[in-house]
Image 1: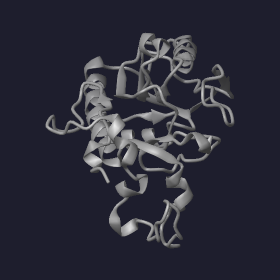
Image 2: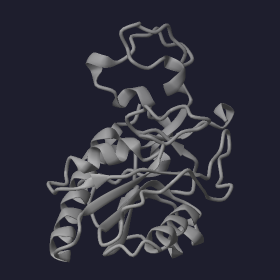
Image 3: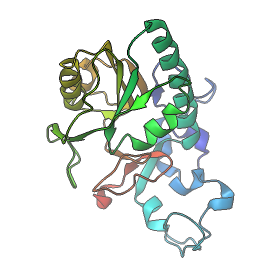
Image 4: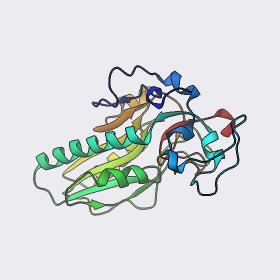
Length: 245
């Protein structure tokens, strides 16, 4: 079995995720078990034959959750390291922007909920959180179906520094839609932050101030990202097996 340090050559934008002597690539992740990145004390003790086993009930994930993952793109450790760096960068930029009527983070529900929960703890600033709900991947969709704001946006953004936070930049529709709607409220500034960005033309052409990782053009789940509202609770980001969709 391959070492987990060879899982990914995913790019952390403006940041080195792993030492340069580790030359693993995404392709080398094919033989990595998703369960292998879970701390040993919390792993499911199973009798492996063809990858199917009987779960220890004390383990927080069922074997079927991990067995649905074809490969791991980003480990929990890589994500945590990158988010800490993003927090330092964002905090420094906000301090340099100068006075305003406050700072408001606008996370896009539900995919960014875990991301923003971790990110906000690296922002030692006085701020507010006002959520936005946008529908773009309804149900079992694996590609964007267009972005539609569901419900109301935070309505007290005038004169404030606003940062829109989303899980993934794919078509760019969500970021553009929210930026336009928020700018109509005349905030002091609007910035955008995403955990993941795909290599598609739309994603790369959509302005985004903070990007955690550039990833391959694959459908990913975990760390808040879902398929049919499942897999959000995985501590890593991985690619679903085709038979799981």
